[in-house]
Image (tube, rainbow over all chains, first blue to last red; front, side, top):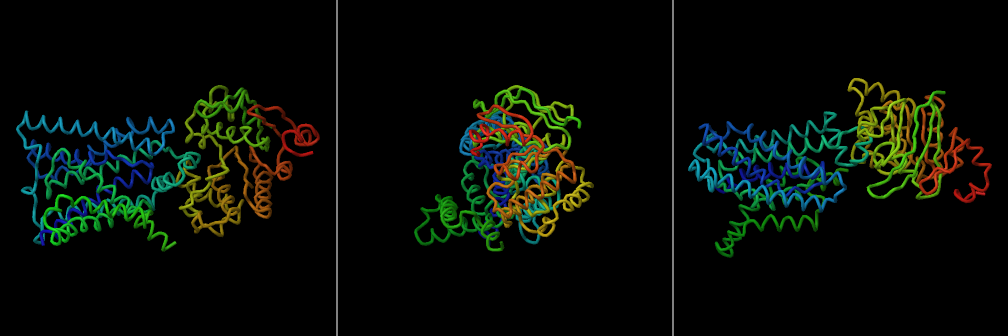
Length: 299
Length: 238
């Protein structure tokens, strides 16, 4: 049962992380490698606020959303947009996000050292399970993570389908030059996308330590899995990461249990390879991802 | 007729590539102006530079008395310029209705429905496929949708970049008829690039000949047609 709850919780958190990655890819065409560090920043916002203000991490979800939205927005404005404006290719922008990722990892490590050395906080390895509540016999993180993912997916879907802003974001994803010609401020829309994506990563980061161990490299270690979620889910629809997170979360947790029962516990450290195998199979046989496949079948 | 657009000593291109040299052009209100020239002469770059999709190195673009050459690209529509691009002129994943709404992105929300009704009364065939996804339409249908979307912003000036390019003769004739009707009914000013000179000479009031980024002729369509040397050398017609 613990594995099942772990898988469900992990799936929702993966979905939240993949949501941001998909949103950025969909609207601005950039694969943001630094997204993992934004997730880590969310966890450190929770650690800092919980340690100094002595409230449950749930209380600081809005703060994590805002801080991470701001960080992601700054990454876009300071790192991506000036280079994109000069006509940089997607590949070059990917390299830029790798550089930003490395800089951010260093900054997070320095901050974790600072918290540990000055305030004697266990900032290099932390878990908030003691703060969690219980609802219907299950830890609150299970319900919270799914509520956050569901609310984000539904509200974003409604915004995309029923507002002018959403229409402009969809138009931007299809034909950026035409969207400009029709009067859409592409820079502002892209900035908004990065902020929303960062906010979603912040929620995931704030919730993650409620069930799983966190450290300065937690987001970095999960970025490949986030990419797998985003690619497997597809960028056609925003519900893609939700389903992909569910499939990959279960595949990772149950898959490694199954494989280790056949081969032995030596394979457990390699559990992150399962999403990579799914990623490779997706790129070979379902390159448009789940949502693209569903769209094609319907269309 | 009062002057709507004046382009003065325009030098433009893309990054370090200089495409247009000292271009001067005028378009009066209600006038349709053609820009003709061989492939690669800079016709599309000229339209792009008016819309700030190409880099302007020097010169002025004055619309209705206001200089717009330093405006950001997304603001140009709000000054009253609609642009039907040659390629990528619809959002294929959006419905036709959504494409039209996107065309009215700069209008206040409450005016969009009214404007859509006006545009649909001008381009009636579009109404039939309003709910269809633009990507499922034929080339001619897409062009009509693109034209309708370009009209949604209530333009004073419409830029048309080869509206019949790649279309069948029947679809080309339909589009040409629509553009002609549009000019007659709305007195909209137009800057037109069109390879099909027969269609174009029927629509426009004035012609400019652009060769290697320089304007080498301006005058009435009849004047250009009667200049056999220009027609043969640059337009391949005798």
